[in-house]
Image (tube, rainbow, N blue to C red; front, top):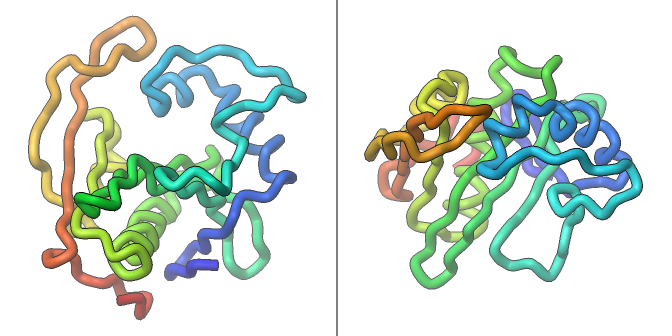
Amino acid sequence: MLRGAKVGLRARHEDDNPILRAELYNDVVNASRAEGRPWRPVGPDSKDARLVVDDEEQGRVPFSVVEPADGTLVGIAALWGIDNHNRTAHIGLGLLPASRGKGYGTDVVAVLCHYGFVVRGLHRLQIETLSDNFAMLGAAERNGFVREGVLRSSAWVMGEFLDEVLLGLLAQDWKPDATGQE
């Protein structure tokens, strides 16, 4: 398990899936804002691609986010779009509703930076988020990400176009967080 100050990132367990389906993916508004594609209902027995972990997939590393003390599931995180040639990847995360507003997002981003820069040897990490996602913007900026641009009206979300903000962080500019991870 990768550990931060408040969270741990571990492999996805099968028993995480019903919770993630119920609290993240069946929430139409949240899923529509996070997915970048239209929400659609998925049955409890379906092989939902968002939940299935393919250990052979090299371009995406999904994690379950947990409280380290007791293993309580608090969300998901991933390094995705991994490009080993250019040594880049994207960061994404989603927290269960009861886990929002507790500083977990900032810690998840810090742990993903450690994983990307130290464990994977990447050169650049990138985040794209909706311009009104102040929690993610704050978590990114507290970890040293720099706003690099705005993609105007690039996301169709629940009947309207919204701007997306592009943020980036280079390994040379990364400052390890206070958890002792380098």
